[in-house]
Image: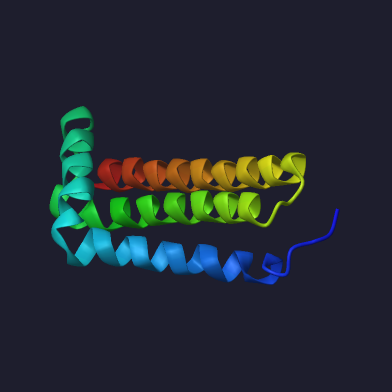
Length: 113
């Protein structure tokens, strides 16, 4: 199986997808998506301040979109499916760790106040 000539552009494409997604979620009418997510989190966890945390939710959505873009671009480059799935799982694992650290930080901030 020959390697695609697009493989070196896989990571820059994922970064590009991240920045475009983050821009769309913070600068256009799509700002409603992280805002509604923040409202939902506020109803589940009362110390969550919606006005301060909407940008962080948009950042998490941007990271998720970058991970999915990286995976789909790998499928386009015809990378071995096992390797591509392993990369997707690693990316999702990192995203779960980021969300867990963010949640832990929120709990710590609310216990200080």
